[in-house]
Length: 262
Image 1 (cartoon, rainbow, N blue to C red):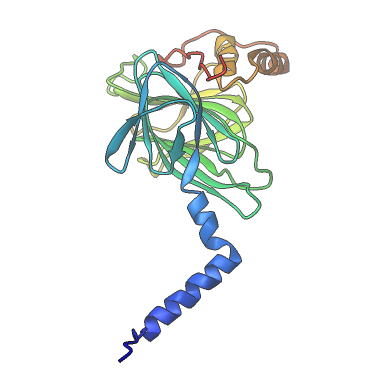
Image 2: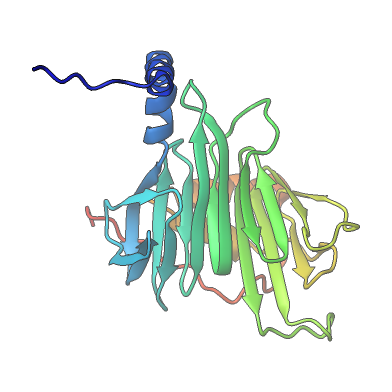
């Protein structure tokens, strides 16, 4: 006797749906975007935590959506994302890649990073004509852009005489383009647009407060990312404004990443 396995109508429907999705290209696209990018420069030591397991970060390591990156003291790494944007996670920082999706044309649809502590420097590929779709979240700030170079720095246990009752701060400095910044813990706080050469501080649950201009030294430091030319960026930035004043933006000092070719 031949036994035939009976397939339920529900299974037939699911199989047909999967066939349609594969035919239209939806399923491969979702799978491909689970990989957010890869490490393209590293100095010192760092780890990646994925699905409860922790592995050492190394040049060429793939970085997935959901990964948490932790850098040690005097260490940093650069991640090149699938849309060619780059992020540098500087020393003593903790960052999670929450989302990284592309549209059918391979252009960024949405990227979201969560910075728990430390500093992340972002060089964001431009997506013209779209709302800001590259976001860096901290516990008390969201900084979103469609294409720009900017730093987001979050620190706790800090003290500032301007904000005597606050020990948690997010700082956002914009090197090129502009970035929308707001405090999600304060619904009445307005969104501010931070333009090239400007920086803001978000104290605890307060609204963003503009500070002095971004110091020239910080413009120069942006060249540390993944082999980008510090000189070219600095000339463009400095020449556009005739120079910037001095001052302190964050406590994390940028480090020169080292690639496998060096």
